[in-house]
Length: 298
Image 1 (cartoon, rainbow, N blue to C red):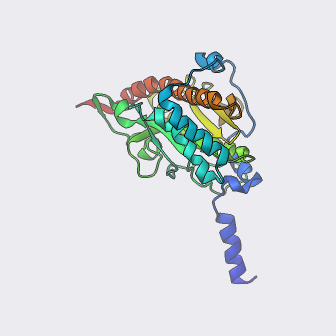
Image 2: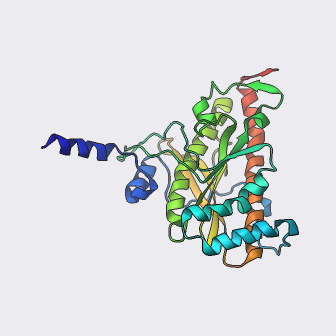
């Protein structure tokens, strides 16, 4: 065989897989114990606000300009990059008012990859979510001085070059119509990494992960021109071989075909979901950091 052909073949085999690789990407996720099909934990820590998300809403006047802009973008965006301009209305406008949280926009992650346990051993491209939400590191350390070294900075700060956004728990992918399944596949990988990192903190602090597993710890969202879906992500330990599996299920879905009121309802719903999952995680993370003995009085 010609040397140039061998080189090309080797390069193809070693190429990182992305969501664009379709079936091979799904196989690679499954090889890393990321379940492709949905599975709802029973019971789970269901948020109390879910039954209120469909109620009638009143749009504040101060948001009318931003809302009109988002509707116009949704109706006329010629490509995915332009459609990303709806993100401020739906998320970042309220997120900047939460000092305990931080976010990154389309920034490549750099964290330890998931280990493959199956036949598909090719590496997965690191996530680059359209938006990643995590904790402001200062909100976790409070009046103490914490070192992430015992956990590993690559787990605490997975966003490349960002040492302030700690332990992400929410990601969003924005796509045009017909590609929502690609967004879901991207989110499955991102969610598994977020779960892995959070679970590692819990395990290092408590030993057992019984109280961590089977509860929603991470959220992802997909947004297209027509709808927004929020997924809950959780872990469970296999009773047969003790393998850790990363599971997900659809928690809520909104249509964007109902006009301005529906747009505002989606905004409020995403804010409620983000606030809920942040509250679910914040207290145990702070206590876990203290229990690991990596805090000292300033």
